[in-house]
Length: 134
Image 1 (cartoon, rainbow, N blue to C red):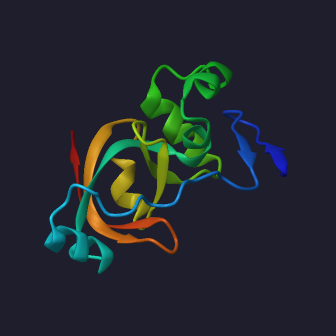
Image 2: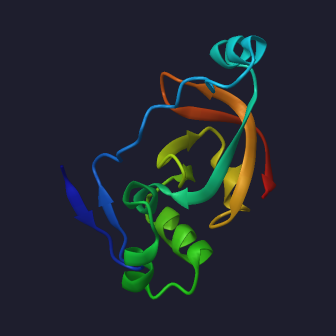
């Protein structure tokens, strides 16, 4: 694993971010919901808009101390300014989802959200249709 320390906010970027694969369709879903999920129909995902660095750690705690960031939003924006990507982190399943549209995610940095979008299971990416604060 390659480690690079960036100046400024002090984000430590790793060569690869650990992400879990998108979970399979909900086992309690109806048959039509399961087929829709497998066919790439829009779904709703919940979690926090984080930066890829903090999501890999499951927390902003370490980076916030390192950066002297006052909150999750400031931490996320600082890390993205230094090369990280916006992601959706689901703390319940500890799953990180890549996001297709970084500009849509920026307004929700550090916030809990619900994203409606089409999952691409091969790249673990949500193709965003909409984002709403949770």
